Figure (spheres, rainbow, N blue to C red):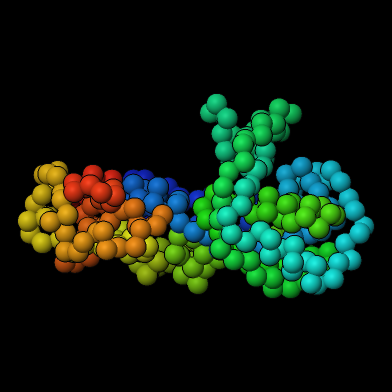
Length: 282
């Protein structure tokens, strides 16, 4: 991406496993400063669970660690087991993951024979919909919070059924509000860049923050932001207390009349003065 677009900086908002496909949001130049907000966004995946085989990586790239032939479950049994993982659950991060231990990715430690198990953490599964059952394969669609491991979800589903299982295939169809229908493959993008016709795949910084409440700044607020002066509730065109607070509205984006992003403010509860999360004065 950096080479194709002759960019100063390029970052991404959420890793994908090497064997997986799907949406990967790339942040270009100043937009790299927005990656932390996009990383926290919800994700939707289409995944295939293979029952009866467990692997050390919890996916099809790993070494088989256990097998079971008893996978001839009734459809209702599978649906009931899967349903139990909806809502707020505790999930143990896999030892083969990009999480770090003392600066070293866990997958590197695991490959050296020194796996490190991180403590369980809370994730949120908003919905799981089974798309197809063709045993031993179960294809499903899952919408979840950032930080959810679909590999681990598959392994846990297999344990719940008593036969084990692993992630057989994975496709991310939505990430932080960006859908697969909006995406373009890297080879296709390269052709578009050569033809000078790729602007439709570039999203403005303001539009990228889809779940964030917006304030259109007047001249006084623009001047305050340019000089880094404190912004108070009186400077905003709405009362931030009236906005339903959740994990997506902890921040407010400030744009000008042309929808150019000027700043992201931290919407701290019960405080009159907002702190600057990031500023784009130019």
